[in-house]
Image 1 (spheres, one colour):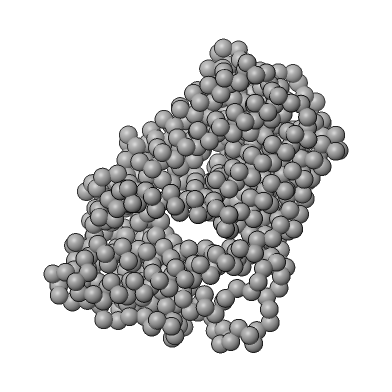
Image 2 (cartoon, one colour; image 1 turned 60 degrees about the vertical axis):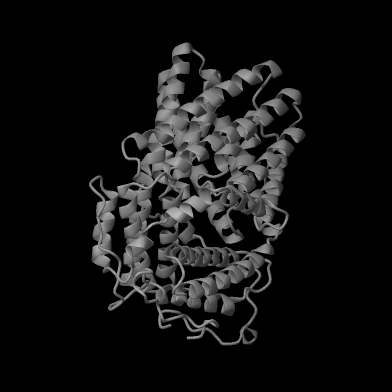
Length: 579
């Protein structure tokens, strides 16, 4: 293919890839465009926090803010999910937050040993990291859980206080659940519309500039749109139109370029803009060569919601958490890094080692290279953030209402900035976290707070990245190999199904979606392994061949026929991936 870089035919003729990769600096700090939905979590967390904060202010009990804030922060999750799935996801987040807080409060009430508290904090951080990655809850991931549970470990606590404090968290979490679902009253297909608009935009970019990266991005966006539609509620006229739009996006990225028979990039972008807007969803014509029966995904949705589908989902979740999971080394890194950071701070006499634990926990991404990027971002953001805290501290101490307003402002600013770059969001997160201490009463010396935070940040970043380097993840290559096998099976099944005149339209669509999902997983696994250290060489030639063959199969089956047409696609990708 002309858009793919030429590589040597025999991997044995190439030098072995380096065990240690170059660590970038400037790209990690470069600002990006803000997310198209940044305002949703920003507004949600402000509303979810303002009501409990102001209630406690009126009652004169701002010392309890840490417990209500734990529940309010749950409003940050699930904004990319359709409302049916969001309801379950945010409820799970609330219960997980309460469970982690319960462990922390119970431990704090039973012991004052710093060694024990740091150990429990590290174990909690590792478990929270593993569960969030396995469930793919999305941003902000495990960091919020670790922040809450680690802070609670070092807060004075008596056993008789625990039920009341957990009740405050649960109540604030229930209110956050309502806030997260409130937009459904206005626009119930909003998440689906945004997912489909992204798929159309990615397909348009691929049609404009076909290449491995744009095609991979389009495949991921189309796959995400299908998953969003499959997880939505009962079919509605709007969702039917959205399914038709995704079919067009799928055809455009599968066969980009002139003469492909798919909608052009300008039309795709026009549809994306109208889909994202508040007006009616565009009603596109049938995609070329596609029968009307192929638009529905009701059969697949029913299968996923049936007993077999639920069992398969549970098996997949357990597989991501099992002993052979590639997520396990990252969880071990989290455990080791958080423990090392906490004990270093305790040895140096820092009064709040939980800041170092949270700093270390926040660094761990899919591989060492990404963890390095996060280390730079977290360190820079925290150091700038303490300067912002020093500037705003006199204002926050003018009165309780000023303190509440400052916290709400930084909550909004953090979500508004963090999608530009993590370090920019950390500039707002740091003063907010420091201001939480002010709710407990008593004016902490500003110099002490700033000095401790700087020391914790540096120690947490150093210890966290050291653990990322020393704890190897050789399973990353194994994940690539499993993804290769799955993608090859999915491609063979797609070819067989689409070549069989007797196959049902729903089976053909399902086979194509399975192949798209396999290619997305393959690209993700390859990118993750490429940034990992200390592992065996990647099967790059096979990865390239399977990706090419998979996308050629998608292109060959793009012009599908319904059962009434009496024809099927005759073009098929070669099974060996040859050009």
